Length: 486
Image (tube, rainbow, N blue to C red; front, side, top):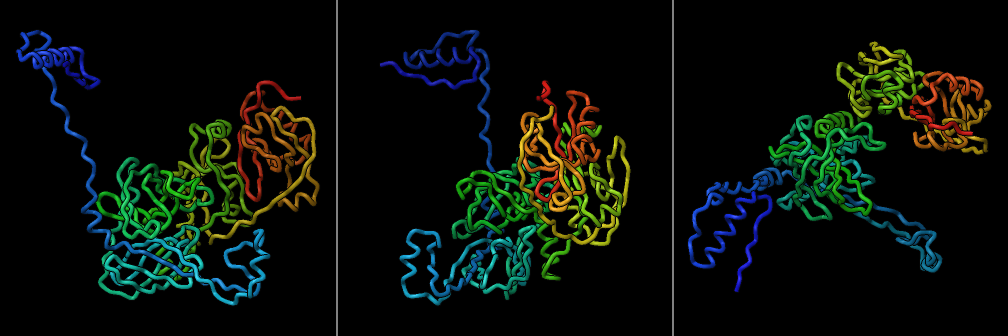
């Protein structure tokens, strides 16, 4: 009966021939004759790749990770039907039952970790939302009622205090030293399973998420699920580098995209919460966006870097400093701004009243201004519905003029309403309902003025439009279609 020989791939032809001869000789009980082919040395197999061992890290640091459970009490009045929405087909049927005058308790789970031996604990702000009672459970099964020292929804950081002494604590690391591709470990209570350990690598650093401009998130592929929120993210030195806060998911469960708040930011927030119960932030009064390659070319920048100022708020520090829409902020307080997401955390961390030098790129050259940072204020949204039709211009835009009432409604002093956007305009991201405020930094207030500016631009050169949308402004670069539109 013949024998089958499995040969590894990737070896040289000579080594394969030698291996076949040796196999045949073994089958016949003979030694193969010497051959030049057989004289080729065969390299020893390489040692297998060693994966990191997390056991020591978990043993030392896991004792400082806690389970955080909260209880919320929801009152139900007469005629209320707990658990049955008002628009449910059976709502009227259940409503005929005797009215329920009671309080319905609900609970949620999260994680946290101990900062100090006397019982200060970091977690996520969203873990503590609407909590009437917070319980902290240690790995030794002790439970404590916790006091909420403060929460900061903008960074999703929450600080708790329990009455205890000589507690195990975590060691704080340096998120700035994290490198993409290095191993990290999460410990928490996913779905209530306490002290669960998952591991992965750093996928990206300084990641900006929609509506989360104050946090430069650490992105990982560590498995994070409901209940992990507020738990620590460790590096291989056993130091906390982040607080596990969010996941990207289409199912509600882990899909390989997890986001952690850098621990240095969380620690600064916790210090203010401990001292004041709230957080005071710096504010400059600008709306910014990334600089795309097309926008960089239209502004004369060598590379697409910096934070492009799309709009200035009236009466803001930016206005007083002389900052203008269309400026590109390349440095704040001596620190380079590579992406727009780099700027908000720096401004927010600046104490109100501090004067900070800014490096700007404006109209083809660099300049420096000084801004006196003020306290953060909220932005006001604006919306504007409208519709009518007309043939598109060569950018693919159908525009109409605004009357004074419409300008007041949209909070603009000039601009043209976008009735529709097709072709190049649609590709650039312009939408129906936008207001075009300027063309290559020149303000427009009439269709005639817009068309005049448009004729000055080379036929196929990218054009930067300043657009107002829903209470904010942004620059969009349009590269006109090769053929003009009707």
